[in-house]
Length: 342
Ligand SMILES: NC(=O)c1ccc[n+]([C@@H]2O[C@H](COP(=O)([O-])OP(=O)(O)OC[C@H]3O[C@@H](n4cnc5c(N)ncnc54)[C@H](O)[C@@H]3O)[C@@H](O)[C@H]2O)c1
Ligand SMILES: O=P(O)(O)OC[C@H](O)CO
Image (cartoon, rainbow, N blue to C red; front, side):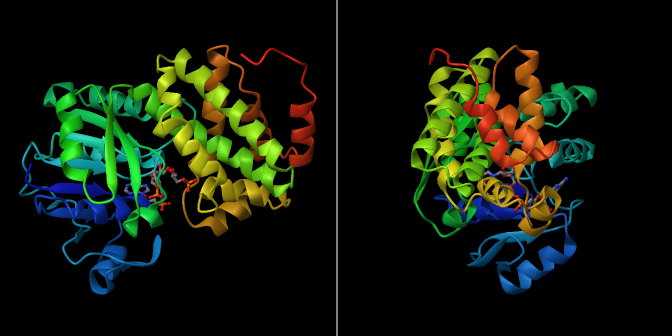
């Protein structure tokens, strides 16, 4: 490995590129933005004020918006991180596959499902690779996830993440690139469990934001998180993931962080829905992606197709997309018949 690349200069791509640029081997790291203007501003000021306010970028981090020259000097064994939201995955992969020369190790950082198809990110990538007949291009893939607010990572605060892949070689490569300083990287082979945990915790963070915003109390919050975790585990195992993954960093770990930490964009959406503010206005003011809003329906549809009950997720969809008012959603959830906990 000679070079590390990050595609997508939002909050997370920027924070992770900053961390990677301090790698033990002194490998060059390039952060690519699709916006020429943002790339120019970051280069000139060393700040990405649009996505990561008031945090200075290290001088060694390279910034580019030149797609055609980005990989000119790359080696096949280089590491490429795709840091766009799920909505940018398809386009990014399609663009990559049109280039003559690209790194062959891809790691995505997004947390969600593709709307309408309910596909997990690894399935979206597999679909695009096979549509482009690119399966034989020898691309190794992995997902990196876990409890991690971008601003804390950008400030160098402690954090632990999980990389999941079928390739133990790629897991080791990602650990080599990122496991240093205040970041620990654990390995896993459970791609499905890791991806579903990351998507579902975002929906549950919206639910918890709603509950906290309505002032339902700490008992309610604990109940919501626990029953939400049960929903996560049910869908995860039905899709072939491992229940242990739900109990790890990318499951309960990220659920605790996102649902209870006010830095979470998804939680903030929930808090504002509880005040009666309308979704379009909330999203306009947020200035960032809230993947839970984008994938709630996809999670709910996937659960339905597998015959899995996810009442909290279902109620979040009703509030988000059917204008059900938050207090009524709580009444409906609480009014469900008694049942066994398992
Ligand atoms: N911010 C965090 O703390 C954090 C932590 C872990 C994971 N994530 C996940 O990482 C992903 C990105 O989140 P973020 O916080 O960076 O979002 P953000 O809203 O801060 O920024 C999104 C960035 O993606 C870019 N983008 C969107 N579509 C693109 C495309 N087709 N091609 C290239 N760039 C594109 C946008 O221009 C923007 O720069 C999400 O799935 C999120 O859930 C975020
Ligand atoms: O701000 P959120 O809600 O997108 O959450 C960010 C990260 O996923 C937390 O791990």
